[in-house]
Image (cartoon, rainbow, N blue to C red):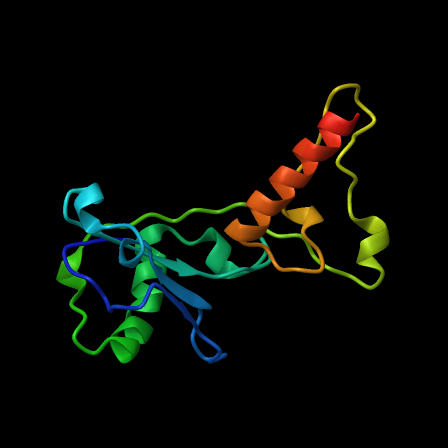
Length: 148
């Protein structure tokens, strides 16, 4: 959502309440200054789901309508009039599914294609995805490339 005002001073809020249909509120502009976005605030409502889930097919407007009561409960001062734009973004493959013996399944840096190397979130196991690990594993693949 692009907002006229901030929801809170929190950057990343994990939600463990199964009654709430999203698992995180990430207010990007609590990490990156709103001035870099024309003075507006950007907030993401995150939900990982199966593509068959009904929420996967809803428009940004429909999602917002469903999420609004929970936003109001979490941020009582929130006014929907603060929202200037809404987007819904979907991606089938956002995070690897870690199964038993995943360390044996984790892809190698070097691929079967000559001179093609891979560095991705599927390789950061046993850590979870994150920018720190993306940078760390990016450096590791470069080191492996340089060593041949």
